[in-house]
Image (tube, rainbow, N blue to C red; front, side, top):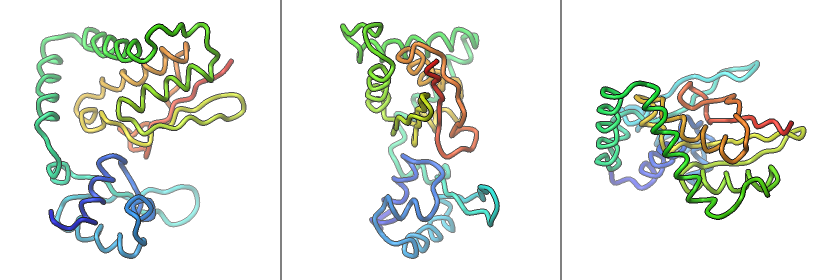
Length: 206
């Protein structure tokens, strides 16, 4: 695909699922009217699709995401290999064993980040700062928000999203990472795989 703006729109949707025209315009760096022109052409050609999303009172707005044809614009070798490996694992292992593998993967990622740091010596804010680093290095676009003494981990994009569509069990990886660093089990309040624009976890400080 030669058009640079269209390629940037597709790449934005690869990293950030379910985005409005205004959000795409901000990411790509051009005005919404121009983005809408490109979006309409991409949708007509089958690279992206739109769904209506309603928030409160008022007209619903359209949010856009990549189709499988759109995904094919990016290198697929590693994704295809990953899906085949997971298919074999899921065929030959119990759900419990597969979940344990993902938990061990999360434990290895956490160990790489913490090194010789003793998490028990850190307060919650310091542990969550390390968690944000761990998730960012894994490819998540993540923000840490504080509200009424509690914390929210907000993942604007997920590197496992397209794998998770077929193997939602992989979501245990970031759940385990959060649990490891926060020393408590988080409450998932939003999930990209369930149609939300982001994954969001609540960590109660008490």
